Image 1 (cartoon, rainbow, N blue to C red):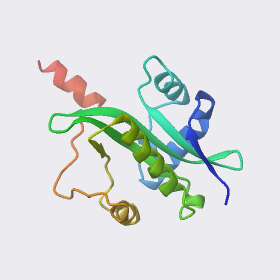
Image 2: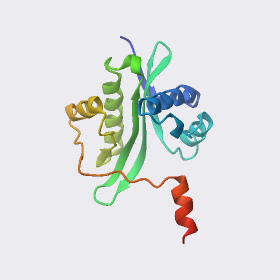
Image 3: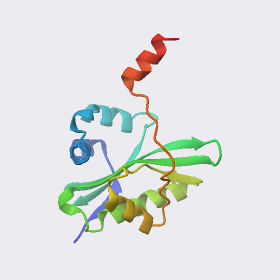
Image 4: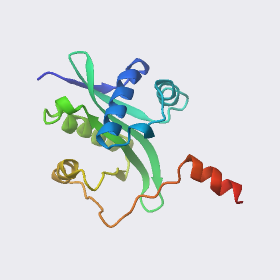
Length: 159
């Protein structure tokens, strides 16, 4: 199969958004997607861009994405966060996930980051196996903590 891995363009964001919604559906959280195509275009291509996105393109259709952004670790220094690695369901197992992860790792290496991190749902065993085969450590003793928009407003109202 022929595919290309490349940096996303502003014009790719409708297809990127489609894959984000596909992932949300897979994770049974379809109503949780609030980001719009316009948000992705403004945030990813502003000055400075809030994220970098790599796409896997097959026959002029984006079938996978890897969206990353810079972080800073108080223990390690510069780090990169992989927000999502998504491959369309119909293309899973075709090597796109590996190619996208390869691109993220090369990008992080070029940046000189000390760590690349991401989360994976504890029930997504195929993804966990994939990441572990690539040498990633799945930290099962850590919990992810979020404060959503309403939680932020509630917190602020109590200050």
